[in-house]
Image (cartoon, rainbow, N blue to C red; front, side):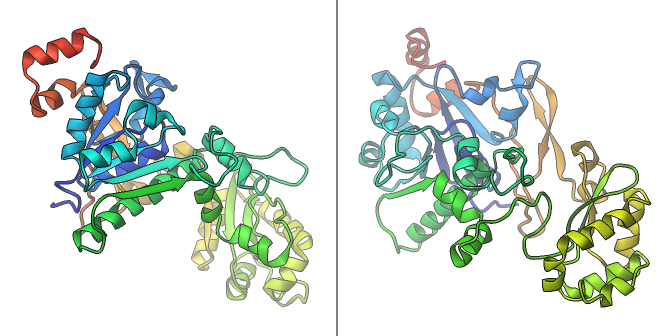
Length: 398
């Protein structure tokens, strides 16, 4: 298939997660992504678990890229990146404030090299108008500051972190969207010259929580910590079955609640004044949940899932991760694919989650070994073998 971003060149100066996730999205959509790593490499290359010395974490966010190792603290190293910038359409970086200026890859410098660049900077808090400008911003920090960790879990229990770097990923999606939007505007002539995009993770986190902050802002009441339950709908949560496995019941309206009552053999609950409407069910939440917990404790998880689905009630098992990959939908959609890897033979990857003209636009290029493409990229930039050898000898490239 012809991928939407074929012909686009992305200079990836980012590391860790938000930036690399954004550039992997662009690679899946057909862009050529050249990942510039420091001599010590992207820090996630050392994050456990390692399989034959190669990080599974790094593998999850870096397919489809070429890797060149360049020491940007040296003049000749910066010259290599400037040559790359002249050929690039997009630059992505997520350095801490002040670092990009020290390394000579700040937007003002690179715009002098290429006046048509779209430069996307991912920051923890942004560079201006914030007292947090210089604070580090790992995802767990943002989960804490956004209010997310105090809205998950249960009352009286410790705060709970979402198990993956949620806001890094959300910021990566937003970065890719803004980059593609800028490229479209430039192509249509609505924007001329360089484009600078700045995306703060903290702002993205609050924005991504949508109704949680808006409910507070409109009512003045902070949300309760309700575990898997929903503040506005009952029953809409996890229940434990007789085999100690959990399932989700999502009776999001009165019609689905009536179906639930019929399915579990208690049609009288649908007409009970305490539970007849959703507002009454929310008001009498504790009573209703106790009744349902007693019912669901009598049979195993898969029995309830099958039964409720037969009645058209939204329901799902709460999977352990190993169960996910046995699911018939996951198998039918071929969500797990394999890519050949020079070190590991074949590695699993998660397929790009969209289709364009009935095909997935996913890169088939493995997550690169550190500096795997250094020589080939240098030759492409016009360096001869003698110059390349000198760059290696002086530690400018690796």
